[in-house]
Length: 202
Ligand code: FEO
Image (tube, rainbow, N blue to C red):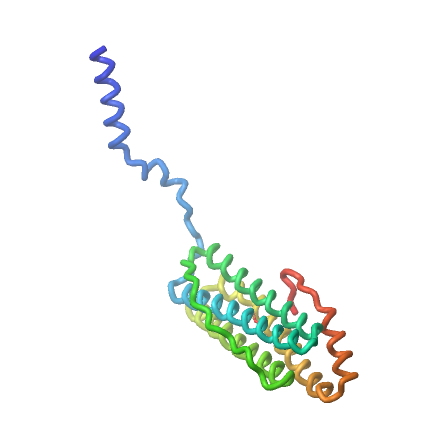
């Protein structure tokens, strides 16, 4: 009986002194590709920019809803969802490459706008800012030889080309129709057709 107790004690001491780090070492996730802290920080900032854009477009959508222009409100609502999808893509990428995700603060977007033209112009202006910001990450990634990030961001560059082109087109269109109720009605109908498609490129 005494011998049994000693054996149990011995096993317990052995377990306690065993370095489990060695045992689990092989299960530790090793990232082959890791982004630098600087790139991770830029992507984190971009996630916040995309989330801010989502809020901004939601605010624009609310403005059009308040004017009973539900088709245009729908357009901005879908745009808002797309921005959240962009933020999600960046979130997943950062996770995949072992970057630390730090969720940033999102500023309150404006909710008062002069008129419909003002909103479309602001949307275009905002897209231009987003493009610059993405180009800046690409530039930094290029400088570091971070080919994974430059490749990942190619999708966003294509997306920005599409978004700037359509935002610019809508600025032209709203300027043509804003003083003409019948034309505005048709424009509103056109934008009511937009639907959110995950991973859409427009
Ligand atoms: Fe995600 Fe409209 O840029």
